[in-house]
Image 1 (cartoon, one colour):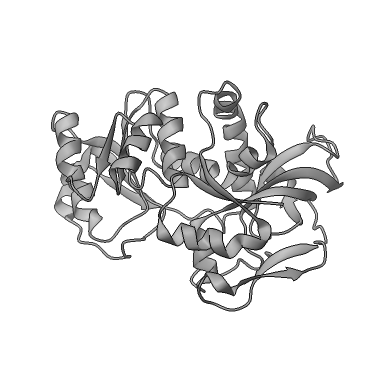
Image 2 (image 1 turned 180 degrees about the vertical axis):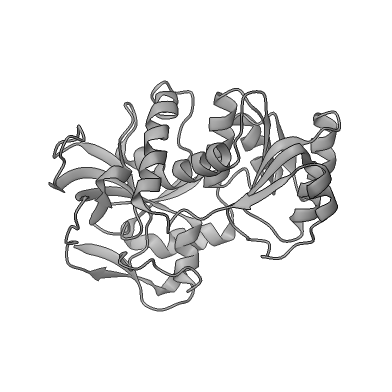
Length: 325
């Protein structure tokens, strides 16, 4: 099968086309003939040698795919061969065929193409797990999304807004700020010209937000602590701004703040299966009703994965970058 492999740690140019054997299925897995795959920031970190492949996972990049089921034991899952599904995988997405745990597969939402369905799993699993399960965003509460124009950001904005929450989002340009508002953010905040802490405090009457989803870290930490409401939760999912920051522990204790975070890729299938079930119940209907949608910035042929990575690193995109086969 055609695939894209990482020849060595380095820049986008180390992503090269290759021929690989079709994956051999493990118990509980199905084989998907891939129509499209998402490009995600963890793929970039893996390419740079900064994100080790979990034991037993494919060394090929790619954490989400959509396509047809062509092999595997389907049991009482309700799926059949030929069905169009999307799946969260531990690796191997940049290829013509990909093995996926059956429990991490979801039907392509009605009305969405394979390309659109492939844009869902990594971002939607991550947002649900961190904003709603870990961050415990509840009825009547507000959310601040750092990096609102990223794939994660546009997903968090849409889901939280559709479920009735006040959402604020930071972005690095006026175009991106307005895009966040068009997707449901009450206020987009240009972090290059505005102080998100001051804006959030003004918009919440000085109270702050209940949950912050952060992929920046670093020197954002002190301002995020001040931006949280009492009993607020700060959830880290990346550290693009550095892995160290100054923490006022007095505020954490006095105001009962929670600081947490997670990574999704190493978690067991059972954990991801539980997220898949929640997405199917709470979020898939929103997609099928057209209340939320995948936001795709640009699509590249599989062989142009290097160009997709170069665009990812430029941060010029709004939403998802995709590979199509």
